Length: 631
Image (cartoon, rainbow, N blue to C red):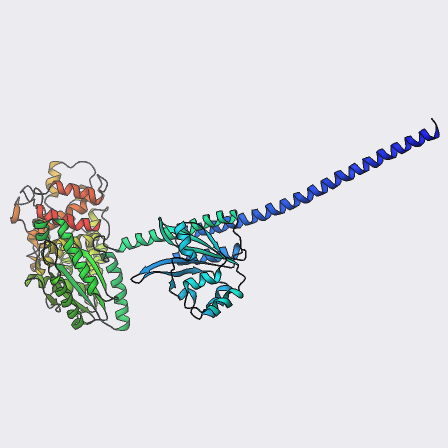
């Protein structure tokens, strides 16, 4: 090969090397550029994942708060502070749409705690959250609500001016110029398909990305869920303490509130009064016009009470046609004036078809008539029924109890039985019961009597629930009042309710607790308990002789098939009939060794079946109306 051929060959090889190096350099450059692009994409995806994670954590936080049943205000304040802090918004708030007699207005329900709002509040003097804001039909809020979509507006000054037109333009300009916010993002909120308000975020950007819109939509849904849950919770809470027919408070709330009022009155040594009201002739209204008009009469009483009560007074429907009103800080003189005002307003209120209704009213005052709230309730009740017995449609002021109370008679009877009679009761238990009944202050609380009756019942019926006796007595008394029984008869009924089954103490426990069917002889033996109670246990006690017939006949049936005397109809004392139906209801709703307890509705159905047979149909009707009010 010639020199020139070798030179060409070397040149060719050098060119191949140069080409290989160049091509390799290009490959490296491509790889380098590709790596840079990948690093940028990874950084972008990481940033997006961080944002998504923050959003998910925020949503999870909201969900956790809703499940914790925190108050709505607390939940909303945490929400706005979370989104403001975690997602970089400069300020957030939730505005509620409200309405009064003057029209629609806005109020800031919750807002984030940040320098931006503090600066605005300082400039406008009155804090924005304390203001009643204007609702303008051409504002971004109205537009967002109409179109039901998220909106962004860079006109921060104009938006603020639309809700607070009293703020001067100079102040508005100062607020906008000194703020890092570039736009307001407005999200309409709905609760159970009703427009509730708006969720607003103040952003440092003038654009709204698709991802941000999607997140704010989900976020708003969580806020809406929190508002809905809180609303449902408040409804359930209100239902628990509110009477469904009248909208007044129910007995449960009244009793709880009364405890607080007693504590306040004793601490401040300031009296309060109770007005007790009983609608006259409700039964006649129901019979003549139908129960719909009876309900109208009851609702009318409630409306009159609402209109004539002060904001600090508490009115409640106690059951049936009975109502109570607590008047804090009012003595008997002021209470009588208030009661007469209610009586007159009710009398003058015209009703469709019925015409007019009236009520019998009683008044008693705590710290004036007594410092024992049980006595006050009793005295109010007595005064109310005194008005009824004296002709109805009048107000009666309570009088001090001068005669021996039914509680004292009941205590003395229990003590007499425990001390002198041969009842097969454990000595330790006997002493325990006597200790409950012996009060050094000579004041016998009713609950002690109920407790003693429960204890005695549990000695032969272990399935008997503590507290049932109190429920029995209260139900029996309410039923007696439906038939306008005088106070003396009602007091006798109270004592009889505590004692009517005491004859069971003399029967073999194994017989009363037997799980298998009773023989005819065993059933007849159990049927002796009214006579045992009346003749063997109570007959020797001289001061309760007028109570013995009530107990002796509490198993007589309306149709004459009962025992022990097989008397029927009106020959049976009304109080004995009341004991029979109350006893039957509680027996059905309590468990027995041979069957499970029934529900109140199941028990009522069984009682209905024996109307006109076991008990008077009118008694069944009144009893069911009482039970229906409580279940």
